[in-house]
Image 1 (tube, one colour):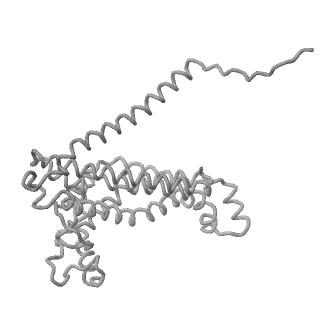
Image 2 (image 1 turned 180 degrees about the horizontal axis):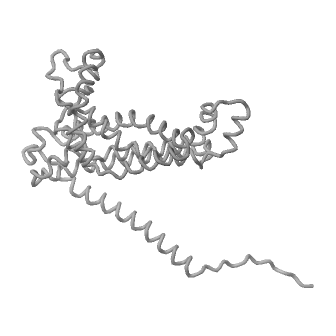
Image 3 (image 1 turned 90 degrees about the horizontal axis):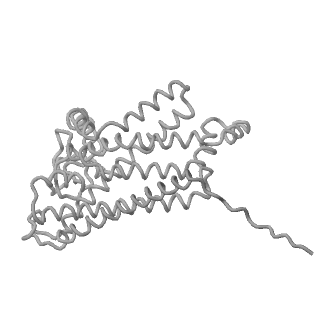
Length: 321
């Protein structure tokens, strides 16, 4: 009596597959090595700045490192949050217009323009913000201060505090508007591609059941694209957190913590503060600036981890995954 054994067929990798696999592995390893090298460099160089006293590092101005960096962290998060609040709904609306409302040719033209905006250097946005936008916004800021001054964001004359209305328009609000314009193409482009991937049958089924075009989008496109929208917003947030030149050109360095958007005294951001101070710094002052860069590095990591957690939690409810 004979028995036959059924062995699984052996997979033979071709040379091209092995080469591609090796290149992919090397590229992934290179990213991890680069990231680890940056983290190690920042940590080593930041420790002297974190432990320095104001006598050793005059940039600390009599306080310790954490008192120095806290207003900068606040300004970075504050400006990025305002930019997201402005850019996110506009980006989603533009993406929907391109993908579902505009005629094909017009949608293609608008899409090309959005993609071109993403390629504009940040220094160009900064020059535009300081030379044109800030001056044009002064009448708008004056109207907000006169009519909505009871809201703390637009209050320019708080009792007992030395704040003054900015007649130049170079405020944290202007910087946030520039950031919003800079992150708008990123969020729009990603949302546009996600909206276009929504299964056509889902939308046609909603329309067949009597839904309007907006109801079809709300019931089929948004649930499908929810996790992708979160990822797009987080990418825009990462760009806003790390932006240097545009903010540095609009705002001057300061160490205040305030919610007022229209005054001459404004919070500053970590990247802008580094750009302003690195040329004139030496010794432990440089280490203090590097330490603030390490804080921004950690914040960016936390934002990315939070975005990944949100996307992973939502992926079971999204057809995009």
